[in-house]
Structure formats: structure tokens, C-alpha cells
Image (cartoon, rainbow, N blue to C red; front, side, top):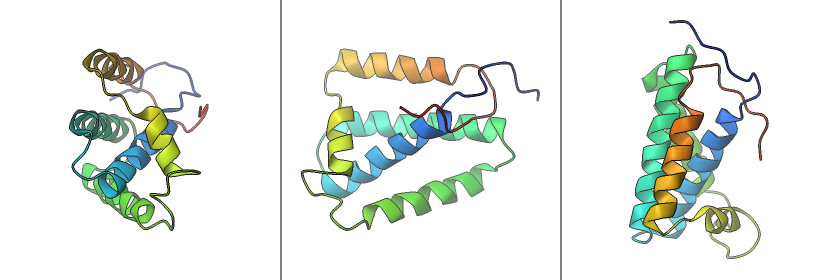
Length: 125
């Protein structure tokens, strides 16, 4: 497979990490809430994972293991679920509840990942 053209600085790994963090916060701090948003996060993580496997030398098994390990690390952070300062604020800022906004966010991720290229961390936010 050849990796196609695209910006060298695409921030895909940044989006992957932010989505992974939001999912860990959601699972740890808000169990049983925000089902549609959690489904969006799960779907997005699957898309980021598939993209990364396609465009790097990582296997799906390796990457899934890294994702699981990172989610466990995040879930064990002291004060993770504190209402101010930190990951809950990130989650709250990202949280989408309307169907139209979820659909638009899903489309944005699909467009970001439509062109195969080496994923990079920057620009990040």
C-alpha cells in the first residue's frame, strides 16, 4: 500500500488521544449516561484505530493493547472525575447531545481520515 499525499502535519494522533481520553472519562466518570455520545466516541476510536493500522507498521492487536492500556492509565488518574480542572472539563467541552451535531462530527472525522497518510501528532488543537 502506498500512503497518499496529504499534509505532513495532520494532527490525527492528537484527535485519537483526545477521543481516547474522552472515552475513558465517559466510562469512568459518567457510567450509564450520554449513550449516543459514548457510541460516537467508540465509533470514532474504531475509525482512528483502523486508520492508524492502515498507515503505520502497527498491528491491530498491538494498537488495541496500547489503547486499552492508555484508557486504564487515564481512568486511574487522581481527581479524574473532579468537576473542575482537567479531563472532565475536556469531556464536557467535547460532549455532543444533538443528533445533528453528532452526525456533523462523524462526517468531520470521516473526512479527516479519508486520505491515507502517516498520522502525526501536530497540529494539536
